[in-house]
Image (cartoon, rainbow, N blue to C red; front, side):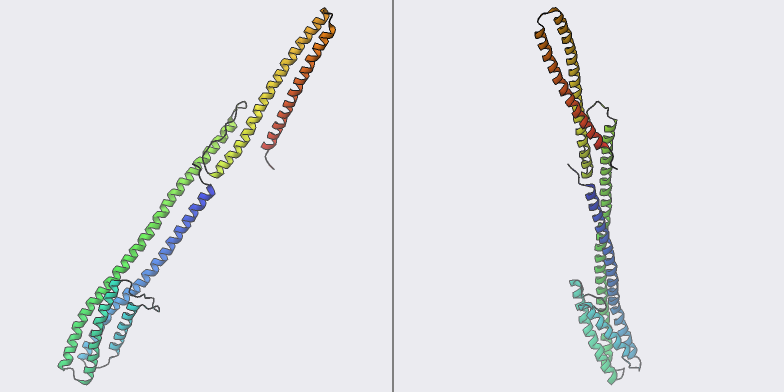
Length: 332
């Protein structure tokens, strides 16, 4: 199976690394921002519990003292209502979203109902304290009702705080799992990168070993082409060298053929010499001179043709060797 290009592998690995790093950074930033907002929400919910206690203490103080200033009581009540509406409906100004889950929404509804009763008793208390003395039985009943209602309100607010804390912890845990996933992905990508780089290194070593074997090959042997399954760049370099090897093998085959032709021509010359010796011998002992001359002429013509063919092949061999020298010469 053919491998992809080295440059493609490097680009793919680089893109995945960048994407994972950006994902980790964005997840971390988002997690920090969410934790900051969730911490603000939990502080507001917890403050509701403190405000209800502050209201109860302030009513107790007013009930047992002649000071009828409702400033602190009104401020605490207004802040409780503002925080409760912000938790229920959301508040963009302070960065609070509306109730994120149904359980929290239902719990907010319970707190709101209890607060309505609690606030109604507070209003009655302020009306009674202004028109009657502190020893009035009706006023005393109102105060006791406020205390009892406050305990129930505190329990429900506490339950609301726990719901927000649980929701925040679950959301933080999920985001942590996402961060762990990205971290594990980076580790796996590092292993994959190491494997791919190792494979590229091994393929490069094989290519250099083949090249070294070509350099060390003897002059009279046919060169073996490089056969390797590697990345596209290495395969392209191998194909270029194989093309050069084919030309060298072709030139060697042609050279061997030319040498064989030269040897045959040499043998023919020796035969011609022997024939001339025979002709001369026959001329000295035969009266049919014309016949012998014709025979000798035919032999010379045949020998000339053989020599011409051999010379042509040797010239072609020389041209191919010159081309090889030009191909092998380094470019300036």
